[in-house]
Image (cartoon, rainbow, N blue to C red; front, side, top):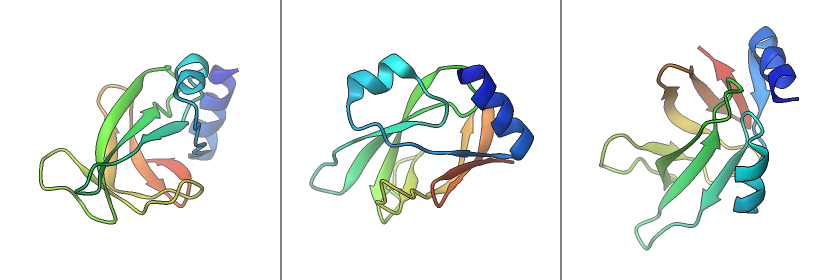
Length: 109
């Protein structure tokens, strides 16, 4: 099923990002473009774990700030939405996928 969704994403250029609240379910299903947010610390830095939109099944964590970009690199600014997340700058999953997560959709570069 993941291969079909990944092929559809490549054809259309976008894939819906789905928030999976249960981390075990997130790891088990590895739905392309799905994500799980690990609650932040006192500074407002969170971990945004995502399943690569290309359909390979690889899960990667990135450091995000709640409405700010943390100073360490690499890091992303996250709009704090779990229904229509936006990350800036683009996400480059080297060797797999490069693009933007904007308004709840992964869009390839």
